[in-house]
Length: 265
Image (cartoon, rainbow, N blue to C red; front, side, top):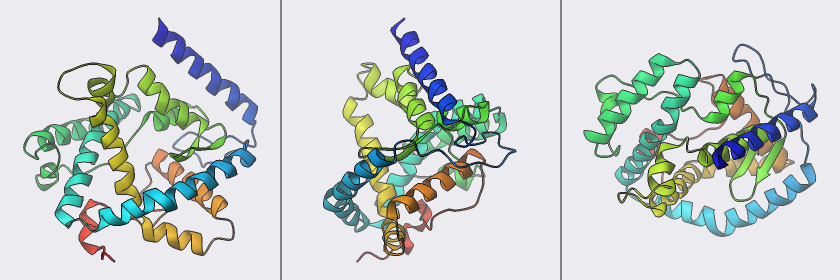
């Protein structure tokens, strides 16, 4: 009953904010349509949180990410592969919810093969036998394909850019146990995984992303008249392309196979 109430509250909140966004602030959610600008409802608050996040990044996250980049390439690639393998636990159900049954089958095979033969995903064995890595999917993308608009643009402390839809879908999926990895590590005492395993994986995922994008974000900040606006624009473009399953890149980033190309300084 508690989970039903939580879900109902989240859905109601999302609908109210989307209704308030109006036609000028709503992104088109059909994969066949172009996207409109997301409404900026809380710019003052967003900019304050953005500045706080910058301070945290410069004093804590960026130095750690630079240290992470100095690790041997096999460790970094293996870590990225393992984190990508875990993401299949959320991608597969969203493939199904979006009607992408072929992709769901491919990602299921990838998860099984890499978890077993690939030693918990450290090695991408599935790719070597013809099952290439596909786009990641999440519940925010699924809501978008179902017709739910993004609502307002928001900046979350520590976590960074998001939209109301994506924030509610992320936290809502945990509240109603839609994330299998969260379920076996945090929500339930399985005696195999602990809370630490889940939060460590989330933290490492963020660290891995930050380390791969140090140079890109430094260049963006250096060449931006308004860094906040540039990050917002970049996030919205990237999110749109993920919803549309576009292959275009909005940022010069590195994937796990490119770690050997990064020169540690």
